[in-house]
Length: 117
Image 1 (tube, rainbow, N blue to C red):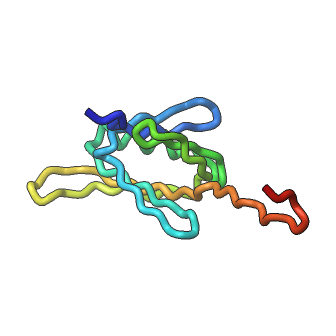
Image 2 (tube, rainbow, N blue to C red):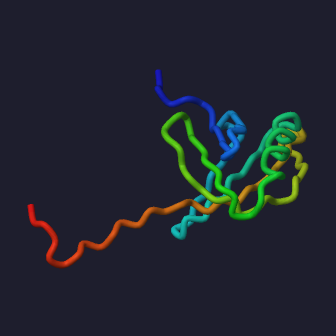
């Protein structure tokens, strides 16, 4: 059995959280730290997702944790329009995309004349 949980948890600085099963979440990352989080879910789940992200301001901090593996710190960049689609079996599902910018910590360059172990 795996120690990684099946959920992704998004957290606002206010303490408000969105806990969603990872089967509804897709993540695409770019080398520049921009991440697109795609949500594909039934209507009841997508309403919770939309309500959570719609209140964000551009550049507002947000953390998310995939399967309890540790927080990833980001800034909110934007949200797409909510789309209703039909899959190959004829069932409806909903799609929403959120863009985040990962906070990167850059290592400082070693200073000349520093300590030498």
